[in-house]
Amino acid sequence: MRTLPIIVLALILAGCTRWSMDRHLNNAYREYARGDCERVMLELSQVERKSRSRRYVQPEVSLLRGQCLERQSLFVDAAETYRFILAQFPGSEYAYRARARLETLRHLGRIDPALTRPAPL
Image (cartoon, rainbow, N blue to C red; front, side, top):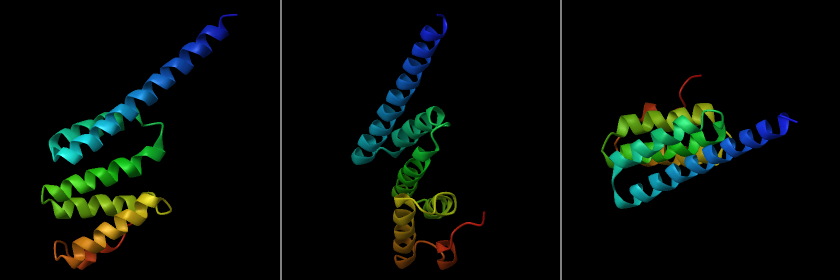
């Protein structure tokens, strides 16, 4: 009889974590639209803390982090973030976007062409 309350409590806590993670991710996108990359990085850190067991969120978080790094003219750091996505999540839609961002940075002359290759595993 005690297992039912424990299961219910576990489900509630899991739902709260998911809701909180989504809220921080939505806030990150909102702040990115406003151009406040410091706030974006803070919100993304909150998402990462809450999503450790939800690996599927990491490529989205990393892509947004890379875009913010670009806005701050930290092109090499952004490229490394995109390379991380390509190495860790090669089949995701975010890998496709990361590859496109790397190519754009290369075409604009912001990074060394050697940085467009995926990071070694």
